[in-house]
Each structure stands twice: as structure tokens, then as C-alpha cells.
Length: 322
Image 1 (tube, rainbow, N blue to C red):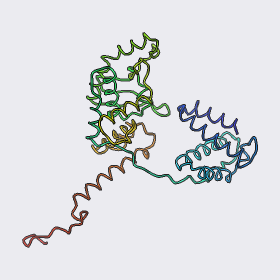
Image 2: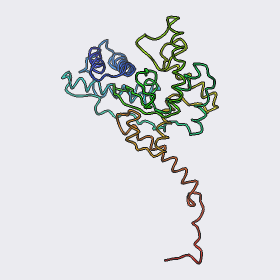
Image 3: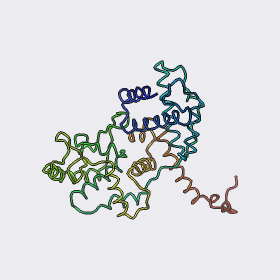
Image 4: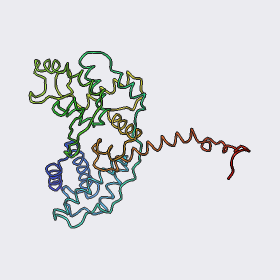
């Protein structure tokens, strides 16, 4: 099994160009599966792919349930196992996929959290001051909301990837897919203010030998002149949330959800939102329609006489009854 897993992960890396994070998730789930097989299920030091049957896969999911592992994690693990054996069948190692007929756990469908327009303004204006890192934080928050980028996409940006006069950026998303994303004037102004002090932050880090590689020009730097990390972005957002007095539960991805929701509420069609977010499937984007439906239902309940429990309006004697 270990050799098959190695071949499979190499295929995902070299041919499907999946991110290191995704590869680690696949590896973790498959190693959990192997530990289950060699331990509780088969009690054997090694397991050949041909020894795995449908009962083994179902028993694996049942064991995860007993261990208190959530439905989302169980579903992801099943997907990894299913993909592994699909690859084995395609390569001629197996003639059938033992995980094919195993039903995935039913997943909850929570609506993504988003900010109301007033909350968004409070968050974007929360970082005060003219010191370099305050300017950086405002540019970071403005660009997150203006573009809907994932955090990993945001921190990977270099200045060469952005055209400030055209208010357009180029980003490489999941699966190595490149897309162009526009942004508005407030984000442009914030980026220009940050750019005016960027060289000073970079030079300070270079003097200490801590700046990023000389050929790189990351848009967002830490105080040492190196590229900002995703964890640091989370801290920036956390500080802004505290300063704005917004309820907990807001994280960088919330601004991505807010970007999509506000576009939908403003009349943008789902296909356009899909392109801007970099979703490979329209089904992923369609979850935002649930948010719009909730908003419409709230308006209906507040506005329609029948929804408020009132009777129908009485027709006046002079009204035309034809």
C-alpha cells in the first residue's frame, strides 16, 4: 500500500499540480487508512492493495465515527481512499475500486459567514495611523474585500502581478489556474500609500539580513522585510475585528464570502462571481444564492401583509370589482 500511495501522491504533484497543503491532506488521510488496516482490521504489518475490499472501507469510516471524527473529515478521508483506488484501477494495478460503492457521510451545509455593509466599512477603517505597518494593514484589508482573494493567493502576490493604474491583478489560484481580478479605487489608494513606504520596510529588513530574496518583490511584507505569511494575515484581521468591535467569528476568508455576497446582492450573475473567485465548479459558487434567498425571505416577512399575519387589504366600496 505504501508504494501505491507514493505513486499516487507523485501523480497528484507532477500531473495535477496540487498544492503542498492538499498533498499533505491526502497523505494524512491515506496513512490513517493504512494504520487502520494494519492495526484493528487486519492486524498485519503490511497490506497489499488487492486485500482491501468494500467491507474494509466501510469499517474504516465506522471506526472514525466511533473515534468522534466529524462528518466532513470522514467524507474527505473517503474521497482520498476512493481516489487512490481509482488511480490504481487506471494504472492496471487493480481491476475494481473497493471504495466506489461506499456512501459518503451526509454533510451539514452551513451558510458562509459574511459581513453587513456597515460592518465591512467599520473593519476597513479600523486600522488607524500613518506608520508603515498601519498603511500595510489597510491596503491588505482593502484588497481582500475588493478582490475576494484567498489568503494564500494574497500573500503570494508580487508587485509585478498588479497593475495599479488599470486596477487589475493577476493571481495563480488552486490547481495552478491563472485569473485576472479587478479591484476598486479605495484599494488602489491604499496600495499606493503602502507602496510609498514599502521600500523603507524592505530596506530595513535587508540591512538586518532578513528581507525576502532580492528577485522577489512581495506586496505585503512583515516588519522584517520578508513576505507576510497567512498566519500573520489572520492576526491583522483579528486586530481589525477587535478595533471595530465586530462579533467574533470573522477571519480572512470571511472577507472573501463578503465580497461574493455583496456582488450577488448588487446584481452580479453567478458565472461572473465564479470567475472572480476562481471556483472550478459553479456548484461551489451557488451556495451564495442561499444567502440571497435568506435576505429576500427576510424582506418578504417584514413587508408582505400575509407574512406579518395581517389579513388582506380590504377593498373600498368604490373599487372596481371587475
